[in-house]
Image 1: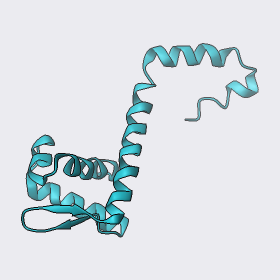
Image 2 (image 1 turned 180 degrees about the vertical axis):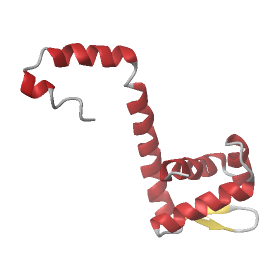
Image 3 (image 1 turned 45 degrees about the horizontal axis):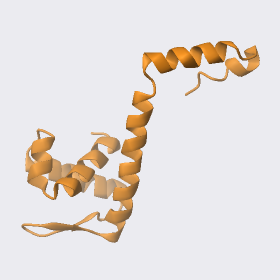
Image 4 (image 1 turned 60 degrees about the horizontal axis):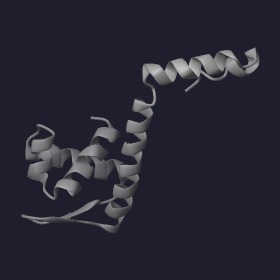
Length: 109
């Protein structure tokens, strides 16, 4: 699973207030979701959640990562929706009016 997907799961856990609700939202079992959040913590090298048997709370690192994860997910959605055919057509017509040297560099996104 990609780090982006793991970040989304982490955000879902926090927003839902529960691993069980976040797992259900993502059509996963609790154990799989919990393992993905643990892998995210290992990848980042920080503990994101203080866990107990029935609840969790964000660590200070978790609060920071949560804010960044939300911003990253919003940016990802924005980028995906801004690449609709209409926007690409407008962009292509704008780019075709540029001098050749400028236009050749505009497709490197």
